[in-house]
Image (cartoon, rainbow, N blue to C red; front, side, top):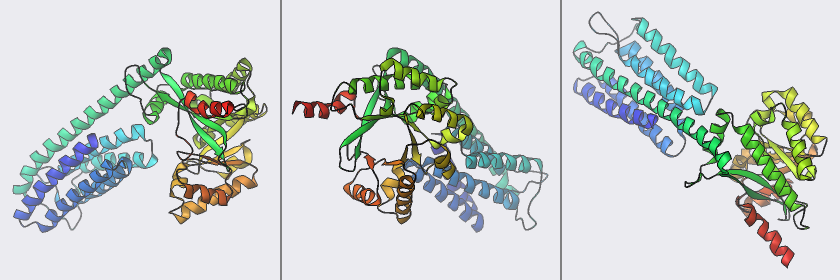
Length: 425
């Protein structure tokens, strides 16, 4: 919201100044304002298409460059009027900070720092480039007031948006804590199949539907749970439920050979007693540990490599499988494959979905599959949606698949239905 309001406001302001400068015969300045308007419109289009982060990076870098040029060439302070264009760097930094809270990217941190550094430098000096062409005071006197009001209003809107986001996060954290007590969480199961299309297992996916409300996307509530320190408790509930599922599957000839993959967050895995709690649950439910797979992302690996390795060896010693999830999208290192007791590589859906159209993605997928086979690791492709993708993966040597083509995530009763039907037949 803050970003879109700021983009619309800057677009409108740019159109206003483009007209003023054109009327005054300031062609270069008028063209600069038109460029700024077009930039904001392109950024809004990217944001509406869901590419908010890309749009933010583009806009922040372009606006930072534009404001620096404007201040050092045209908006030159003198004894009568101060420089004013630089104050737009404050709402720009605030918008970046709002994005940084949910996307802690080094690129975003650098852009925020540059905006603040430029603001301080431009506020503290009268410096201008030697070839500066100051805007006449009879125009700047209006710009001082108009730009100051607009920039202050934008800053206020950004602060309000930041406050709303913090309140939303707090409400979400309290609701998540209540959800455990009210039993609002449930697991959905997405089938995993072999090269012949036979079910070999499932991935357990956490879902949350508040009482009397609509389902909340995991992309929203899982980061909030991490931030609130609740993933340990929620993750333990997931493991308990998964163990109960494995215990139930073991009672049927049709399901006892299925494996169940459970994703584990970095904060949960690094808890002091994590491995002991997993082993206790296995003993309590009496399940075969070789039927359980723990999915770890590369962020877990870089958190504390020594501790992670030690915990993985303890769990592998009893037969629990270890899958490296979303391989290739994070802090990929061949050292992980050499040092850690992994049993499976999962090819990220972003590679799978683009491999039939992008030669580089196709080469990466083939490389990952061959590397996994050479290291005697199972290789599973996520996000498989078409037969064309299956054919490519099969020809490349992939051993297992997961995606909408073979089944969407579903409640346990729906997942068990094919097995029940086969048993009846």
